Every structure is written in structure tokens, then in C-alpha cells.
Length: 150
Image (cartoon, rainbow, N blue to C red; front, side):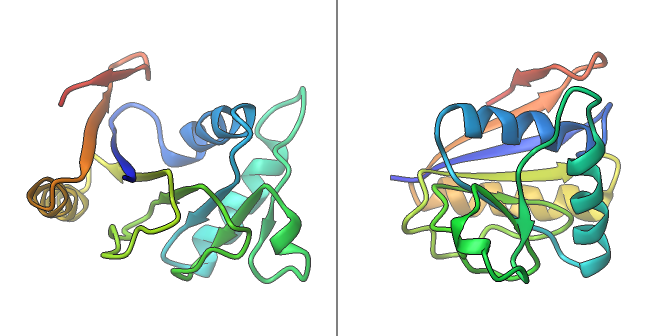
């Protein structure tokens, strides 16, 4: 069964938390696909992942690259799995899809300061819980650490 995690952003934006989430998945040997809602957001995240740390970078490509299937992290704006990822991260208004086959983990990251994002996440939470899926809810504290709330 796919594990579904809801990450409620409070004190730090997606650009700051995504690298840490990706690093953890890669340290477990997992491949990841990150879906966002626009090409502009995809481009901004692509740039950020190359420059977020002075000590290194996260190996990744966009789905438009010809070698996407061979890469551990792929950024996309489509609901597909170009690199046979075990982890799917949904952000920037992307909703949890009905079909989750093939994923060990699906992570929905949403902005706690955006009322529309909050309402969409609540609706997705209700749908996931009603379907009997395993789900957990995590919220950032003021220091940016994740606290499990449900």
C-alpha cells in the first residue's frame, strides 16, 4: 500500500524544504519524480536544486531531457513517472491522483498561508482517509522542523 504524507508549509517555502526531502529519499536509494503545476515553477525549482548548497547539488533533470529515465530525480508538470520513481512529490497546487500504483510514497507539499491550497489539501486528506490509505500529516514549527500532527 502506498504511504501518503501531507507536508504543511508554515515557516519555510518549498524551495527551502524540497532539497532536504529529496536528499532523504536519495539516501534511501529511492528514485523521485516531482510534479508541479507550471513550467515557470519547474524552471525555478530546477535552478534552485543546482544552487541551494555551497557543498553540493542534487542530481536531477526535467522530464523534457532525453535521459530523464536514467536520472534519480525528475521534475515534471505532468502526471507520469518517467524515471520509474518509488516516490512522487506533488507541490504547487498539484492534487493527489486517484491512481497511486507503483509508488511506495506520495508526498503532498502545500502552502499553509494559501487558503486555496489548504482547502485542496483538506479535501485530499478526506478522500485518502475515506479510501483506507495510510496517511500522515506533518506541519512545520517556527524553526522549520516537521512535527507529526496526525
